[in-house]
Amino acid sequence: TELNLIRNFSIVAHIDHGKSTLADRLIQGTGTVADRDMKAQLLDSMDIERERGITIKANSVRIDYTAKDGQTYVLNLIDTPGHVDFGYEVSRSMRAVEGSLLVVDASQGVEAQTLANVYQALDAGHEIVPVLNKIDLPAADPERVKENIEDVIGIDASDSVMISAKTGLGIPDVLEAIVTRLPAPTGDRNAPLKAMLVDSWYDAYLGVVVMIRVMDGVIKKGDRVKMMQTGAVYGIDKLAVLRPKMVDWPELGPGEIGVFTASIKQVRDTRVGDTITHERKPTAEALPGFKPAQPVVFCGLFPVDAADFEALRDAIEKLALNDASFSYEMETSAALGFGFRCGFLGLLHLEVIRDRLEREYDMDLITTAPSVVYHLHMKDGTVRDLHNPADMPDLTYVDHIEEPRIKATIMVPDEYLGDILKLCQDRRGVQLNLTYAGQRAMVEYDLPLNEVVFDFYDRLKSVTKGYASFDYQITGYQEDYLVKMSILVNDEPVDALSMMVHRDRAESRGRSMVEKLKDLIPRHMFKIPIQAAIGGRVVARETLSAMRKDVTAKCYGGDATRKKKLLEKQKAGKKKMRQFGKVEIPQEAFINALKMD
Ligand code: GDP
Ligand code: MG
Image 1 (cartoon, rainbow, N blue to C red):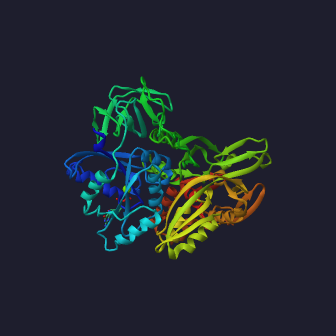
Image 2 (cartoon, protein in one colour; image 1 turned 90 degrees about the horizontal axis):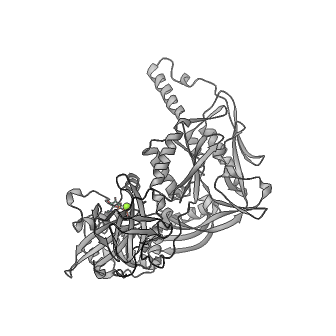
Image 3 (tube, rainbow, N blue to C red; image 1 turned 120 degrees about the horizontal axis):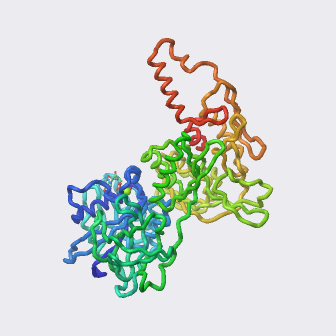
């Protein structure tokens, strides 16, 4: 295809502003997919992606569009992962295209993820076309939202395309804007092959599928190609474009986007951002800025029933086949037995993986307290990474500890600003900036990531009735007074509940943990002390009193079915319990105890 007839673009938006609906309309409006094959949210393939409305893997679709100028254009839409956890992958896929549609809900205005995503697009040098969606809604106020875009993002919004992705209104204008306002790609067909590895995934039938964007040169079926980062060489078995189903394609030249398979064993052998070239006549220089995605949040995953360990291993290995950014290694815990210490790109990534293990693989899991990666500066001058509070060495060997910090951007209606400031202050935040756009405040905070990994997002949503939006990026490491807090139940430490905390917050965190555990652990036939301790010093303590009566006693005597039901319920409950010394702790206790008030 001629370069001047290609347009490559992505859609950036805050969640729920209509990105998937617009993508569906563009695919449908151009006849790329026959009406009878059309289903909602065509590009979001995994169940979890559909349910949560987030995109986890990049996806793309090639659309043929005959414009008003009579020419037929090839439009490649790359749907980028829609969340900060996948930040590096977002920035890669952004670099595979030249422009973005900035979709903003005309009844809402700019939100935190609108900003984060549009900055990524601007960083990648994109031309941006603002699109105001949902103008069918009575609450839509396009003029106000245009001003809002200009104030907050600082780009011209006077030529925004007004649409309703739901009714289809304005879709032809979007297609014309893509052709007339976004730039064509550049590249040299005769230069050595240089293609960017945008994403890869595991397909049960085809094995590893690699998505590429060709910069220079031409790639064909049968070619032998080299991955410049790993040095591995492969023969191209299949070359295709996505519409969005795979359609075999003879060759891909500069500016084109497509996929190939090459008998690659696992997704781990492909690195997002890597440069692909020909084995013979390779390009001299790789594409700049390659860096592998680093896990930043770690937690332990243990089967509730120790007998399920092998099944868990199997499930984790299968998931890892398709997600190179997720790391795992075996872990043994005194209390929980065999399990895995897993690393994630962020909290959402953790939740997604846990959800999939529970739903797709039917695992009952205990998740230990999520932990960030601390830098331990040892007295002997070495620096160690600490992924697990349980591995914290004796303090006499440690000089100081550093923790990761983030810059958080929060957008919130005026009336909730006070609650947000309080929440951030409580979490050891330092305010960086506070500005207004109409009735909405935009506030930036420097926060320890450790204070955000537990339940910051839930709290933010609940104190603002869902009106606040939030986004963050890691900024660096900083020293602070951090200690390991252990939890003892019936005088036995439960390592799965130990965590790193700031010294000043240890008492209050310890207090809230033991109070919660007191409610979460069922009574036993004996008294159970529950304590939080730093080193040998107890900072908070509760006592769970002994059970007096049989549980079934409260069913007035004779009702046999009721009694049976209660016993069954108890039995079912038991399945999700773990034994710690003489005490049984229910699975929910592990998750709920970690939530802060
Ligand atoms: P995404 O999270 O940005 O992908 O948003 P979706 O495309 O999933 O849309 C979120 C919700 O907004 C869905 O319930 C859509 O049906 C709805 N929606 C999308 N576009 C429009 C529109 O133009 N008008 C109205 N009224 N609702 C819309
Ligand atoms: Mg979506």
